[in-house]
Image (cartoon, rainbow over all chains, first blue to last red; front, top):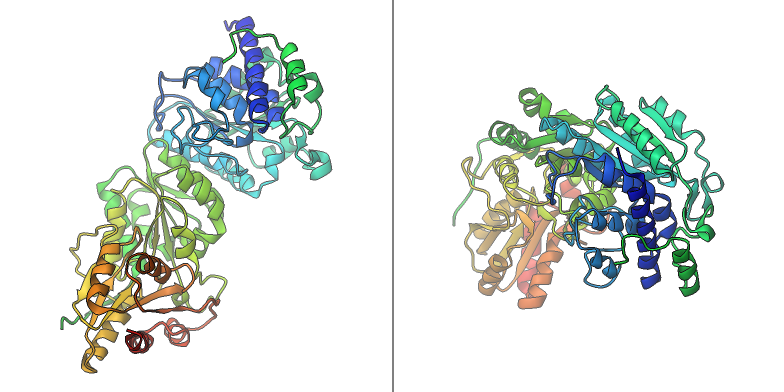
Length: 281
Length: 317
């Protein structure tokens, strides 16, 4: 049984990491990062089968690909706190000569990262290739991917979504962060996408919703159901209903904190809402 | 003077197909992807022999590049196949982020490059692809000259760990390099020794350069013909050694003069040994419909154009 208290404490610490990292360099993307903190913690602490250490090929373990690379703060925090690199390195986020680039990359050799992302819409194709390589290697582990909902406006996704079901890539769980926000406003204001569920279903995917996308128990339950649906001839899509900026009240329910750093006062406020649990880096 | 003849003509894309077939038999990690152009890319035999290692992507080149990048994660060596236009310009950002910046071991194999695609016209005749690809950090760019060299290059790039752009074409052209050649990435090949002018050529223009050197020889001009099959990394030394002897150079390629082999050569010369240079290349233009031969004549990409460039550059010594 997962220890929900431990996972919750880790999530709180991850939130602190996110806003401290972004505040320090006065740049980065806190909103989407905060919205996905529970998901990343659940994925790396409970859901994925991971080997010790890191090798690029990842044969014999589950893989994760982040397509919306701008939420790198949550990715870096959870990777560090899952043992991929020292947590002190979070201090170098977005600084010159750092392995923690603004958007994730393999280029600087940061353990845990298997593809560069940031230019949107490319991650699902990469995840598909990795999933098909697993099949060729008779490796029955899963491939996970995460995508923004606004990111689905990029056409390459739909090439990938069409391909995944046509080729029965059923060892893939693609999660959509359904926070309904993007840089210029709500997704409905910028470019209404209609029912994302209906679209994925029409393209031949198995779709399930996690309505409480910021609730660790709900995430674990939903993702375990998603896992149980793999290997049945269809790719699996999880619609993760999250609140952008979750856990820092003034950042919630708005697109305003998509790519904006808090000032000193706002940082103090955010940290007060998320008391230190495992120790700051 | 060493002369070259041929007994057979074949398309360079068939050299790619033959190389891929051989890789299918010898390297279990090689996989192939195609975006609905199997016949044009001559991938049929590889597919027949290795159906489980072939991925038909459909008309979705962006997805193909991403899937290829993903397949490397797990140790595969993906060879993507489509026309040069759809292998580069259409998917530049996918190649840039998911392949080049990510350092993925993908071989981007591009047929129907340049004007010699012919009748389909300018929408498909990319003359900018060498420039696009050579600008990407870490990308190797190769443009072989005949069937045998294309086959050898295809086999060789599987043993190189990193992204490669392999460019070849549609028309039948003379086969004049040996069937048993060993292809060395980045190593120029000197076809003829000469003292008056250096002719550096790539792709379909190598045969034209050899034809030009014969005619020039009869006119009393001694041309040194060098085949640059690898535009990046460029064999600087071969070029510099040759111009140290000849004092002038003509570059020849089926590509825009902006961004092509000629500009790469000019950079080396400007840095190390400023030397008069003339460019046989297209002049910042799109192509048009026509037969390959008509197009190469109209746009000045043939033996005669090379000879004229030689005469011009020699006056500038």
